[in-house]
Length: 261
Image (cartoon, rainbow, N blue to C red; front, side):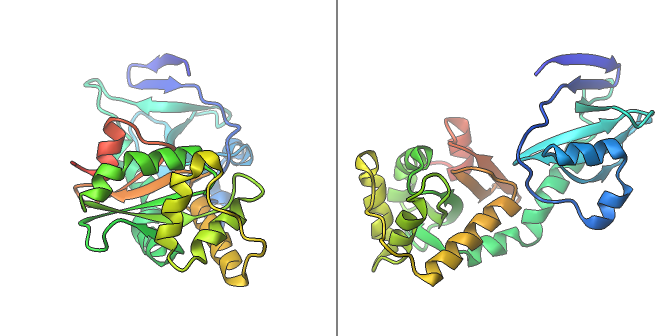
């Protein structure tokens, strides 16, 4: 991305728009969008709603996949800039609103949907911290996250809840179903992760209707929350707000997700 100055109050960064969409805007909101924003939605950006900012610009909260974006419409309604609107002291004029609008779908009912999804427990049931992660049995980065989380899991501080999906390879659904349909799904998950380099758990030759429904529901939930790949992680921050991470969290991000060891 390149950064350039528009005015004293605006710093904008150019942004590629060919990304996967996540949550569709409500029908009533779409009807009110200027044509250029409807065009952007067609290119894969999800418009969440309008924000109030100073400076005479119209501002919109948006997402590209799970990445939050602030989009500013120019007065001619023909151009947009994607970036950060700041005042003379460097304060972001849209940060709080953008955060609230991006997290709102998860805050309202997403956590409950996660609880009700087809997940596999990894860690003690009474662990004080719960972290949800969308996991594909063939995903190498899911495996790396599983490995990285061992100190937190083994100490009893965190329970990972793996929401199984089958999206990466042709046999991913059959492997995910093998975990879900195992006598002990938790043990089957561990088997898959320990054997990941050699191919993981053996795929089922036939997936039950129940597992098919669960995997489809999990995949739809993953998309509805704005994720387009695995691992896709949802957790509660120390202040109780919802946090999300797309991809493998490392270093500071890992500690933010799992908490102190």
